[in-house]
Structure formats: C-alpha cells, structure tokens
Length: 244
Image (cartoon, rainbow, N blue to C red):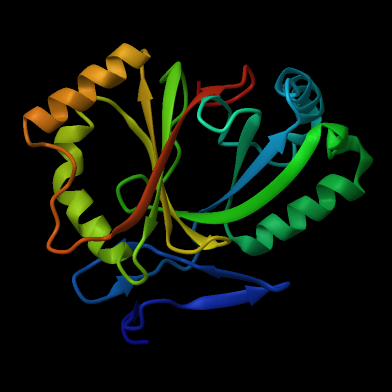
C-alpha cells in the first residue's frame, strides 16, 4: 500500500468466517478504499403463500424495540416477480459492527428480537453489499410508492468497468427518476449488482424507461460487455420502512 491506495483489485478482512471488501471509488486502473466503509446486509426471505401480511405485522411490532439498537434502510415486499418475498436491508459501518449488533439484538431481551416469524419462512438468504460511488447511502423518505429492483450478474472482474460506464450516464438518467441505491455484493452470491429505482406508478416507470431509451440516455454505454444475466421485480415498501 502506498499513499492509501491499494493496487490490488480487492482487499479483504476476515471476521467470524465472513469475508468483506471495502470499495470507495473506481478509477481506470485501481480501486481506492476507505478505512471505515458502509455496508448493507440484504436479507431476503421467501414466505409461505399469503404469509406477507402477518410477517410485516410481527416484524414491525418487534422492530419498534430493535430499532433502538440499529435501524433498517428499507423493508420491501414483492408485488410483481417472485411472490411472497420480503427484503429487509440493514446498514452497518462494517462487518464487525454487524456481528456485534446482531449478537446484542438476540442476547438483550429489551430488543425483542428476532420477531416470531419462523413459521412463515421457507427460505432465508443473507448477502453483504457495498454501495456504488454514486449512491453512497440509501435514499430516505417518500420516493415511491413503486420501486423496481433490478439484479444483474456481472462478468467476474467487470464491476469497475460497469461503474465507469454508469458514472458517465447516471446524471441524466436520474433527472428522469430517482436511483435510491446501486450496490454490489461483497459476501454471498458474488459479482451481483443491484440497483433500485423509484417511480410514481407502473405507467410512470414505462414512460420514463421508454423516454430514456429513445433519447439515447440509457442503458449506459461501455467499452466492454459486463452483463451475464438480468432479472427484475416490482417491490413495495412496508409502513415502517424509512424509504417508502
């Protein structure tokens, strides 16, 4: 390391068998890293059919105490796409803080955690994400009510190239609708890139996307192909979500 710059593509720390890397910004040939990165834990649960309302109710009641330890960035449930799915997103300074707060949330009874929802869950997944240089923190407030979650599998080693092309195009695109977060995985399914967009309605989404394409503003143009697969889903926010 020289002058705070790492010339290797990734630099990882290990804590309790959890690997995490801390991206600050992308340049042409190097990655710059910050000492105290923000990470987002994205927890995705597939529930039994018609289990979402009860899950949200029980989660929300337990969260009233849990939020005194740490708060969520957002809580979503699917409307179009994989049904009976909920996504809750937790910001932490780093993986060490995550571990400590998760232990405290269960050990200290005052946090009433976890919520009693095991009977509703069929599948659970946890991933750690690092935010992109152009969305360092999650948006807050009333941004929706419609959100589109777009998930891309990126060719290994091409995240820097993808961010470089996005940085050139994102300014004009976000004048049309807000990008509430763009982030990539650091632990879990690697080389995954997620971006979340807010819209007033499904009609608004269709109009914005068509206009962006017709004007040549979107999708971003890069020197190389970066994508392997693409998927999307329409999601709605829970009443207690900081982002709605």
